[in-house]
Length: 104
Length: 104
DNA sequence: CATCTTGGTAAGACATGGCTTACCAATGGT
DNA sequence: ACCATTGGTAAGCCATGTCTTACCAAGATG
Image (tube, rainbow over all chains, first blue to last red; front, side, top):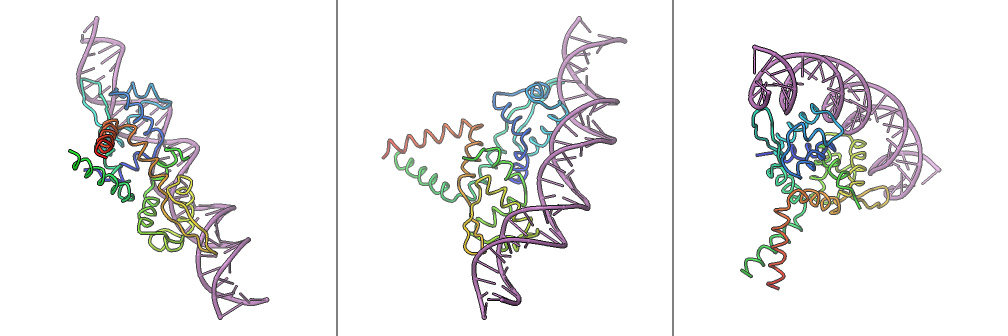
């Protein structure tokens, strides 16, 4: 379980958002990510640790290569936090869901 | 039109998130917000400017009092950014909306 | 008009965070 | 066995951001 604080802190950095954007295209190794960005590999590595703790990213080791990919958990946490302040959209969604159930 | 970068940068700070949380209870003046938080009024004032530029907050002047309240625009921008990386939920929502239209 | 309230701004102290280079560990390949 | 690849960590530099106090402007209140 991630705290929304961790997620929002993680997303509050342009380089980390760039990493997320790059990973949106599919899983990549650390070095491959670094090639896409104007920062060094260690910088990417450090950012990945933050993103991982925020459950925005996870990785699988295969040999010496670490393959990173997006993790939905963090994004869901962020969305949940946002909707806390938006009872309106929350109500809309609930109404929509209810309408759908009526229809089905 | 806000950039999602501005919004996420703004939300990437614990004090600013506290301000948002406080304002979720309803509009407040700058001084009133500061009383709820462990920081000085100037600090709050500075944060409010950042939040305002991110369209997470807006205010109306009435005399010397500035009444701040949440602005949905920034939150929508943040949500839109998140959903960019979540074609899945986006597709679900679209399907849901379509189902609803069929029903109505 | 005098004074209190309200809040924005300026200047500066301080901490934190992001980045780099250098280094080390571990696995893969020849 | 040897070397290349891959990536995490350490140390340290530097910029930026966050906070404080002090100050000032503008409107309310008596």
